Image (tube, rainbow, N blue to C red; front, side):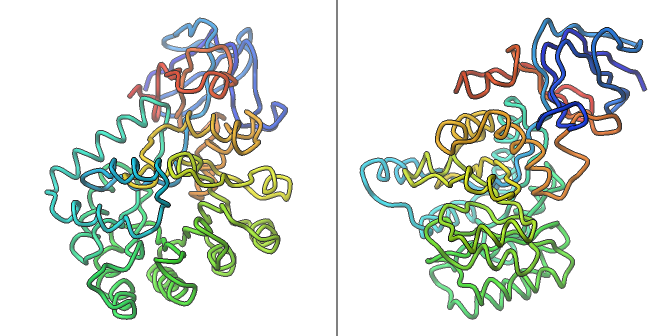
Length: 385
């Protein structure tokens, strides 16, 4: 293994609180990568020798983004649905069925190529870890296929057979399928199990049965919760010890209390509100209550077709009243917490060398200069991608 010294870093975000502040930001800093891991961080004047060195010329370095919620295994798009929303048609869960039909008709090669394209987009924008869900197959064969394809790109694969009930299925019979043969086929390719708890999708009793079946098979629970209105999703996530409750757009005081007391991460997905003209979640309310918040793209062809974590950061600061520091932390360490990956989301000795270099002097430019492609280099396990 060879070591690499990155020097000339104007602002280095470590997410290590021992360096002070929420982000553990160091100025006039340096970082040493040894093989695939971070070996040293500190002030440039104290940097140790390494086999090679690169001067970043006063740029900023941040931990790689951890995108803890995406739906990348699909075919087709729903641009016409988006255009209709922009003229007043409300978003509903039923539009998922359009993507299901296209995905079932696609070949493995077509689906794999689309995932590869989107993951490449993400990496160019600084994302080093991404969670990928199934949910656009909704048959035993197609759900297993989606997860097998997702597993080529990430270890963070999520079985979402409970996305919606297919139009030709009886709801009770479909729950039996999701908790039986479909789970049997999907479990070998999955780390997580998820369910869309929402009107037009699954109610609390159905969702509980689905999540408990997954837990019994060794999968860890996640929940799509409270996106379209107040509902049972957040409370169910707390009851079952889910890693995250994602969306969290409509919350009661009891929901906020449940998130804070249970430790369930609130996954906020602001690109969805942008694309559906829905109210943004109140991140300030959650943070002030002590809830751990993650930011993610929810990249999907229907409700929000963005692969950009910097865009989500800018939206979180502008529309959800997060500080730039809170938004960056939530897009890195918060995402890692949502995936229960304490090894990710920070740049400390021994951590994977997953990082992004910004063509800017500080991370503040992520929100200050929205839609500008600031990420110039992305490294995963010490290798540029």
